[in-house]
Image (tube, rainbow, N blue to C red; front, side, top):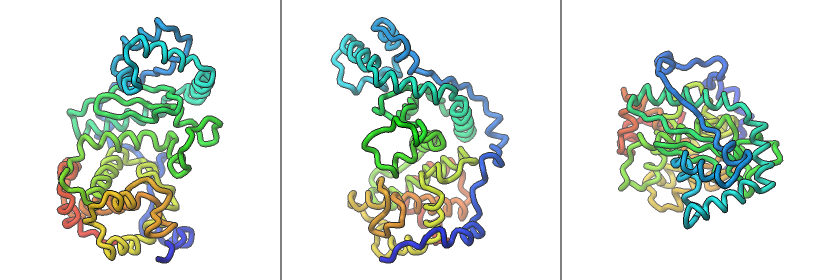
Length: 333
């Protein structure tokens, strides 16, 4: 199959036809979002576990913040609290971990921008879902052991993962196509996409590629609705040239799915080819970005909303992927 056309050759036409994301500076959140009261406090747990740590202080931290302790340490295989305290004391007094903590504190001494972005995200979610309970939010230095923990009750941000790309401390064994998404611009969109799962109804019996595509499409649409000023690049984790190239070649990409009868494929290996992490979707073209099935799913969901008078609630509650596809009237741009 021929390679996807170079995005650089067709970007001007693409931008004229499809426009572009509004810059964060020119975009304003809906007034209805800003009217929602949100009381958010981010707990800087790294200070409690690295600054002048003693066994007594560590045990006190465990007792005072049981949700954080359970989320971070319960899966480490400790047999009891005493063993946990001894081992964690060794880890957090290690010279390398102490140096990493100091670097994180230097770069993230002020996390006001993260806090503001999270507040705005929670305002958006509570606007659409007033019963949404804001999770407790903690930051930590994990030694590149955990980047994000996100569930309905707690969020833990491993700040060491989000140091700048040129920082000497970086997580090991992560390919660049994943590593490039570990920055502050991607942080809050990633959290919102993860939180969307609690609203994203699915038919667990439907294990087709289409169902997987629609699941991610709904998740990305949810995130874009909650964070309307966030560029699509930070939601799906593509570079700008990858989005532009995908739109320019959408007809060819879609043709591959149709010609190979992929929508109702149930083989997990085949599904991962189109929705799993990869530097590119090699079965289409070395120029097609990885996770291209998720991107197509987002386009299908957007068309479903355009062609049907559907609210965010109704979209997220619709668990019939085939119905969404059928009513989307989706066609490549």
